[in-house]
Image (cartoon, rainbow, N blue to C red; front, side, top):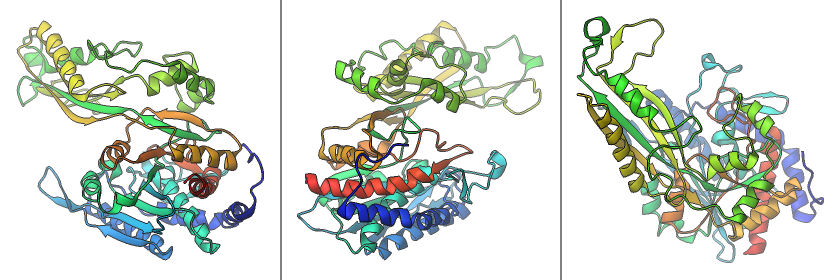
Length: 484
């Protein structure tokens, strides 16, 4: 691992020493939070109660630091079967309102993806287990660990009886994994209230591209999600009775899905690349500077071969070019065994990751025109319907903003190296929501390593990342105060 470029002195030295001395307490708190099964994905009342408990724990923690905490009622989630479930309250908290200081707002979430030991976990996913410096458990890296690291930084200044260098605000939700229900409405509502004094917004909800080198994220891809339905009738057919005498919906759907992307990963929809931003020389240099061992990345991903042989090509296709992924087929027979059925109605699901300057409505039109053309060539008597169910814009940051400069300096202080300036191939909608609604600088400052396995059966955060990440946030506060 890297060492700090020079030993910290003065207040920073005291802060770092305190964090080192109290790291076991910080890990214990993470253990208590991981023990709460705050799954927002499964619409089950027991899990919603766990979510409510989780939000209460976090609110209590913030109140103990002296923060003013508001648990905002987010209403109810209406389910397709008619029942409704409570949406966990959204935490709005603030600590300090000195007009001479910058106000930094941290966003995080405390809900997690489903996790059961029988799904392939070596240990109980809700019991934090440390093995060789790795803290395994659901939510450790996504996102309970980073939320606590920010709180650890704040609590350290409090424990040392030192004035916080910045005013701090928190926005913490419990429905991120289920689409951040009610959050966008709250941001709009509080634009002239809670958010009016915010100067900068920090999100720590993604990962480094490396196991070793810290990173700053300056962009994410958007996402357009599509459903294509092919229907003959609502009931399935017996293949012995009907096979060979009708247009089978599954055959039509396979042809449609097969027309979307070729074996090299290139999207085959006409015009889809027309509005992709051109690559600049400055951008090319950023890919060359990134610390990525392709062989290590391939091995840790358990992939035999990537589509591209160079680091630069791989990163560009992961971050700055669109991609199309086919996710599944609804209505098809997928269980073990042999069932001679012809599905009467099937729905294919695929999505396109969007990049600047692609337009969501233009992409939707291009997809529908392409699938209409492919379907018409089959002369099928079935009905085809295409719908876009989700449209999320890409996000790009201004890396010349003060908080990116402050974060770079803090990373240099804590880790002794310059950060990789990376993008994220996935979509984090809240970044674009904050940027578009509040119109303040948004920065992504990840803490976790590339092999943290968020959403997987081996999710973890390294103790080193968690503790050094707590120091990083503390150093960031001090650097923001200097620049302001």
